[in-house]
Image (tube, rainbow, N blue to C red; front, side, top):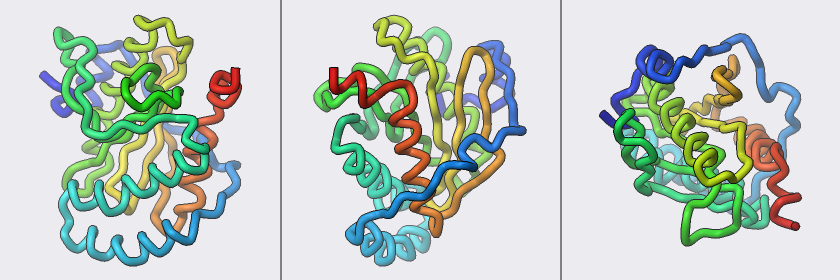
Length: 208
């Protein structure tokens, strides 16, 4: 079993989780302005990425540039990994590669404190990717517990490029944001990512 094999039902059963779908987690977050470079890139590449229609095209042409922009806005004080092996507990199915994962560290050579996982959903189906995303979030929490990083709250994103859905794991509850965000709301998506980066003390820890 691997991350991609989990459904919402199976991941809840396997790890004794409950879900809360009633919260608008980031409704009050104020948009930030994206760079002219990102705006120009998306204007050129989004139509092509959506026309090709594969998860790989959406990942390369839409998702990755937005994540890189978010890291840039953080002055590269968080690290971003793509397509790395993240086998944390194979016996429980927590193995495989992550599409994207952010760490609360500027260290780019090695993953040290994962706190945000991003799943590119197949077949343009956000719901299809939620089970996998939660499994990767659970794995990130186990990783942090083992390494004693102090990171307790784990965030997740399921996206098809044109639509972004945010999740939050606290204790045994997975909060699934009621809202979905669309590409014309790139400023909002970036603002949410920055809020997640700051929550939990990323800046303070890196400055220490």
